[in-house]
Image (cartoon, rainbow, N blue to C red; front, side, top):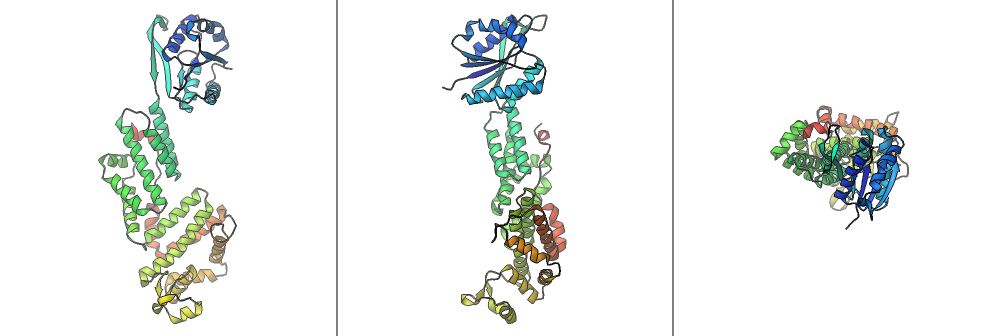
Length: 426
């Protein structure tokens, strides 16, 4: 069995004796192995002598700490937090520690409680009972109230999970939701919210990793649940989720769809937002490659990785020195894919070639940045400015491919952000 510790704030009361009686009652009820008394200069003189002379301390280890200013909440919280940390270093876990804030100044009680919440102390107690004309609990009429502030911790964990969700840290959000669900909370509505947030994290974690089918299945399930429907309305996600369900359906059903291109673009922007500039540029390069593949397939029914050479202009093969595989098949690189589009008279292919050869040579510069990246063929890290430059250039290719559809999808494919958490569970 693990040993128990108790932290008690010690005030003065009317004469010290009345407060000491209540504190001894609390110690008797909790029966800790180690006691830490948070005192003031005055309570050491007026109250502690009565406590130390009581038989309740026999065989128990205890220690006194005197706070510097009994009316400074922030200072008290800082000091109490330090004392709790020291107890943890002694081997006491947060579930082995009880905090009693019955006596002391209001600032002492508040500071001790704040510190206990910060360290997620699992048990808090205070003494109440029948009071005399001065508002003090009558000696011998004490009653201990003990509580576990699980609901406070539960809400705090869900708030942290939402913060991680909003920063695209979905796996961390799931872990916090599971931790919250492990707490004993009485009302079912809190668990419904936790499950809902966990499901949202799983949807967008899978989507962010390009597991479109898995994301679609979870999204489809969440939408069919009546409890989730109410939460979708409260979180103002009903329309967003409906749109995203349609996008995911298209993406999982077809290799070549414009939604997949816009999805790649948004994925790159999220990596940029996280400060992962090399990751963002890697996605931009894949997007440029994908747009050529998309255009060749949608307009000419050609797939770049396995094109029948008989479908290609002979001059294109000769001029570009295309290597022909067995059975008359060819693979096309990004550059050759756009060269083929240009040879077929396609406007996107012409746009690429014009951009590649223009005086500013922005496209060539962008491709060189990518090629020298540590995630491609080189050793150079990509900074914020270079990432923005490539994102901007990539967006122009999306607009050139299908301006109307890009503008239509641009806003509605963005991942949602959650806010005002507390209002959802009242």
